Image (cartoon, rainbow, N blue to C red; front, side):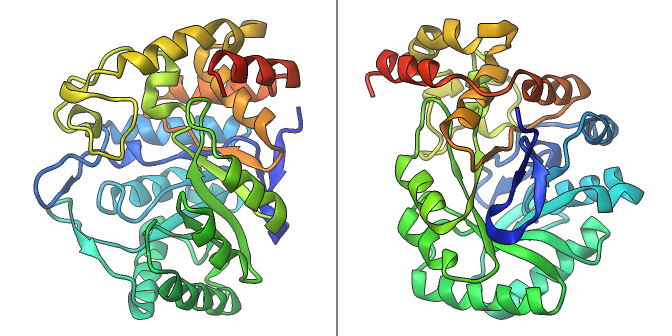
Length: 326
């Protein structure tokens, strides 16, 4: 398969698979104590995993200032070191947090905060520019979002960022950002269990890349059968928006049954289940760039290995739709 993709109309080339850096931020929480991370993490293993991913051809890393309350950006910046220019770095802004207590304290959608947040992210990532800067407030009022789009254009003019995007699951909102000259992408949920035809259509019409979060459905498409034992893991107390998990962090039996029904197709050609889930996304649209999370060298290796196997076939996509009754 083509192992690189272009971020929309920006001309920025990335590996067809990106790595999502939410998990390597470690533990952080909402003001009410709700866990927002993926539990404890070993920073040295995270650094090794990032560097191994680079060696395996991964050139796109997606993080956010709020992941681990700044910690993910710091770890990623350290891991990249002198190889910063070999990669395309994406981060996000809009949330306000306390680095010392690792707590999310609110959000700020003002233009002034966008600049402060970008300045802080550049320092944590140890770089002079961000390649893709993403608005992290998915339900923001479109009128305010248009203002922030114009702020991003100013950042491009100043050389602080190369392109920008909105992380939202609403195509109408994404279309507001798409009107900006240097808007390159939209980041949205997409996996074999949660298709997003309207968003993919917008990406096609507007010339945007589709950056796919939750490509492995928070681990369910990687074969995770039960919830995490770590109290600091968001899946141990899943918020309402987190689909596929029921009370007590156990996986939703209906989801597991559907995943089981797809297993034979997804694991064709010697793929692991996770590799098959990524292969579905690539087959779904040539604009997609899935960004699975990782916490170890082994996970980095398995995810990167999906690129060698390439996308599923059109016939397999049709069969999956039939099995899922779509």
